[in-house]
Image 1 (cartoon, rainbow, N blue to C red):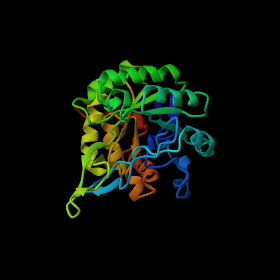
Image 2 (spheres, rainbow, N blue to C red):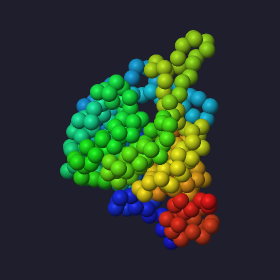
Image 3 (cartoon, rainbow, N blue to C red):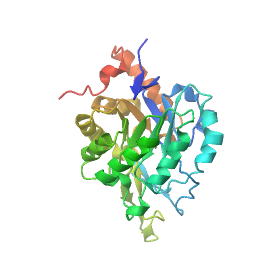
Image 4 (cartoon, one colour):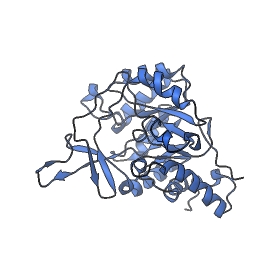
Length: 302
């Protein structure tokens, strides 16, 4: 039997495959397609201390090899997550990771504190949210702000903390080091890359927000490169994501240095994507007679 188990900050996952926040809801709809217990973890949609209405529509646009979204982190708030979603996910043999968003550091800490006594395995902090107290720049685009929010969140957290890095920076390794200095337990990357699409017939923006986050296969080479760079610069485990559609894609990230991987946009075109990636990794290990997946993590030569 091949060993597909990986460990993130002391939390053991039965395999390295999870879902990317915002592409899987809280798993309720996808559970009609397959047993969520086949996944290493389910990552919830970003949750805030109060419900967020999100951005005006249209807020999704298809692009070559991907999509743009400016949903604006619409979510029902922490109360609904605790009353409906966490009890539902607990029925499955999978780990639960809650993604958290906020407009201020205090917002984040409030949600982290609420979750401290809940049956949740890990917390993922989305620092691509605009910091309303600092003129709207995202927390994850300034290393000092990233280190500060990481430190504050860690004061309230009872679960290991994953800091989700934004690729919209000059040097991703500087951000990784800032999160590590702040006490992060795990890093996840990459979030979406800021992009734009224009409707030439209406001569206006395809998305009401003007810009949106680009995801899907188009961003995979950038994501693999950033995961490799971060793996070389910090000692923390990494969850790699960005355009993963197949087991082959996932294995690129693992070989580059990721301990686990997240499937995002692929869930929209193929609701079975995450399960198929997990099965495909097992098949690859059989084919190449690899006994333990840990031997593949960061195994790229040179």
